Length: 319
Image 1 (cartoon, one colour):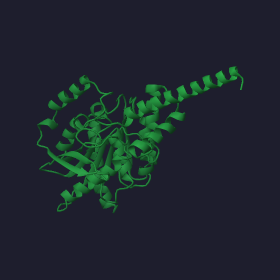
Image 2 (cartoon, rainbow, N blue to C red; image 1 turned 180 degrees about the vertical axis):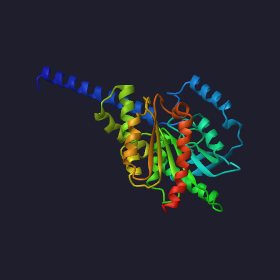
Image 3 (cartoon, rainbow, N blue to C red; image 1 turned 90 degrees about the vertical axis):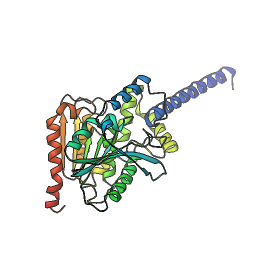
Image 4 (cartoon, rainbow, N blue to C red; image 1 turned 120 degrees about the horizontal axis):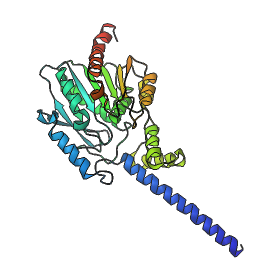
């Protein structure tokens, strides 16, 4: 091979190798940002952590007598939760917070209102977040199995008392309860409140990647899926909220802010259209991510009150 051509081949190989290494670095960084849990310090700030602590110190939940509880996940992780019994309980609501969220920050105001309406509460700390064990978050794909463990826990706790059980989730927590829905035995859950949940882990991660890193779908998502399987044990496209709600008859109330620029409201619309059971979609004009309760106020409350009545209607209809 002539020397000039040999140098050209070496240069081309160097460019290809550099591009591959750069892409790998981007995939590693994006995977870490997307899936690594509480132990990750790269994407946290002292200011944000301080704000979370101050928010909790001034919260309604801080003033309550909460019981710390826990379950073991199917893969052996200890998952923490916080139980608040209402003396006049009409139901119990299992609450699931969002991606890099907290049970106090995502549910403080809503939990207070739930309690005022006669609900006992079980506020879950999702895997790899807060006090729950785990290295990687699963965008609802892994957490849906954790949700079923929490339902088993509640069923045992109330084995001597029949009480309506509801699931509520915001953001990734909404995806968690929606993905769990298709695997929950008939009658175990009376209704699901899904606030600003995404329809697909793959789609929301791709959207975030485009917005943050200006990447294209191929080959990033192929490499990212491979990394998720190897490191965290799941693929982003192996299961979706739409898959789940298309095979359950659990009533679902979908809520979403129209001004949400993190999880677009069209994702709740897609979930709503796929849902085969009794359902309603409440859109909040002007509400950004996780702000529908504050923006809608009484409209939100009245809609949820009507939603609680669905359980009685379904019982009368023999469902």
